[in-house]
Image (tube, rainbow, N blue to C red):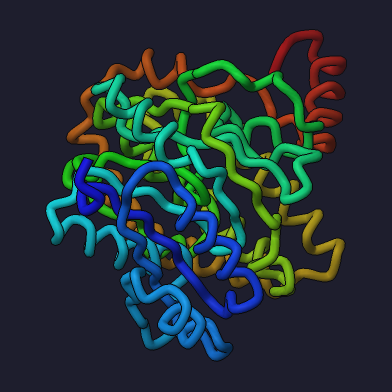
Length: 339
C-alpha cells in the first residue's frame, strides 16, 4: 500500500526526553506509512530533535499547547488533505512493536464495518496492562479494559470493543468525515471515548487487535501536572454523557452518573483539590448549552437503535470504583433489590 494512504499522528508537548524512542519504533515498522508530529508549543529541544534526526517526518508547529485534541486534529486534517485512507494515533511516550501498524491495518481491511481498531497497550516494562480498548458503563463512567492487570494472554482474542484508546489506535478517515473531528473542548481525557461513542451512534464498530502491541510510559506527560486529571475529569465526564447517551437510556444512566460524579468530587476535595474540582464543574456548566447543541446534531444522525447502544455499554461499575461498589452494596442491603 502507498505509504501516503496511512498517516501516523503523534501529538507532542515538551517530549524531548521520550520522542526519540517513539519515532525510532515507527522507523522499524513493517507497514509503510507517513509520520506527522504535531508540536504543541514545546519549549524544550523537541523541535530540533525532530528536524535534525527525523527529517522524514512531517512537523507541524503550533504556537501553544492545544492539548491532545488540538494536536491530533491538526494531524488528522493533514491526512484528510492528503487523500489518505487511514490515520493512526500514537502518544509520544509510547513505543510500538514493529508489526503494530500492520496488525491494525489488517483488522480494518478485513472488517469493512469497523471504523476504529485499538491496540494491546501495556506498561514499558511489559508487566501490567494499560488498555485493551475503552468501555462505557451504565454509570456514565468509561474505563480502559484491563488497566492495572498483570500482563497475560487474557485479552488475546480479536474482540469488538466500545471505543479505541486515542493513545494507540487506527481510524478510517471516513469516520471523521462522518462524525467530525475530536472535540477540542475536551483538551485531554475521554476525548477518545467521545469519538468512539459518536462513531458507534453513526453505525461504525470498534475492534481490538491483540497482536498490535504498544509499550506506554504511563502518565509521563500529564502525571507531573498537579490537579490536571481532576480538572479534566470534572469538565469532560458530563459532556461525554450529555452529547452521546440517547434520551431513552438517561433514566438509567443519569442518576448513577450523578452519584459517581459527586463521589469523585468529594474525594478530590478531601485530597485538597478544591480549585480543580470547582474549575472543572464551572467550565463544564458554562459550555453545557454548546454540548447540547452538539448533542442535537449527533442524535439526529444516529443510525443505530437504542437497544443496540444498551447492548454494548457495560451494565456494571468500572473495576476500580471501590467506593461506589461499597455504596451500591449498602443500597442493595437497605432496599433488598438491585439499584
